[in-house]
Length: 263
Length: 157
Image (cartoon, rainbow over all chains, first blue to last red; front, top):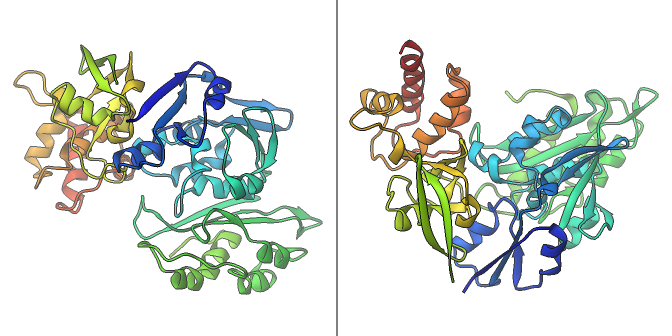
């Protein structure tokens, strides 16, 4: 029998968590499991804490509450740079429900927003105040997230692309995000992240390294395209085979980096 | 364990006892007797169960029922006023936008949310608005045409 527990603050909700409990955000992941009879948990823990839905400036970073929905991100002027990634998640109804915190927990091939946040080097702030990189969080994926801290990218240095077979809405063949920082006209300290190319969204260090010090043009990115799937073993699923993902990744990476539209 | 939930359903106060962990779709269909929202996939992929909560579309199969306490829920069951169909319903009938009809209630609610916010949408705005709703019969074109026609009719009224 499933129990639902509702707490006024996220701190109390976090205290109530154990391995038989799941934390309910927007419901798009957990209620799906409930509907399909998942017996690995028997408690749903939720909170009515409004602070989880806040977006606020904190120094030169933005703090985005874990409960902020994709629709709220699309409506926020401060988060305009994340709008394309938010739009990549489901249709309008899902976007009214799905939260940014939940997206970090989404199983393959979901989690397009987490890909964008990984490229932006977002920091995860847990309920008890602990902060860790999103990359570290994705490696263990436990605990209750309070918010994400995101530094706003400059100009057009942030790019996001979702590849799906169905338009305008479809599950990811892959998603890709790039934070193309420059120094003296050349790429420097670039961050590249993929979704649906590994069990969780991942940074692609082989590509990042190949982009160090190059110019952002066909010749400059050639080595990065050759390294597009280095170290990755993309999964097979009903959307695409691992082989297909590996074959098409360099094409989509080129389009992402050079800002080309898909034909 | 059952808990009482009170919300507004299509403008009328509704009070039901819901099973712990029940989704809103089950409560609407079995608790309230409103059979207009349909169960399709149970995972948010098909949109057949789309209802409006405080005017915004949600897939009711993924909404924990008790979270709608105190909120306003609208379903296709409340679209017509007496014998007068909603302009969207009329346009769907006139434009043959329903074949098997299973997706239709979700399509209508997604379209209503759009027209309430944007009375004269473009074709691509309509496509975006119903992008979370699957139809396996029509190929979508008659549905998109019907929504645009309903917008035109409402504008003329």
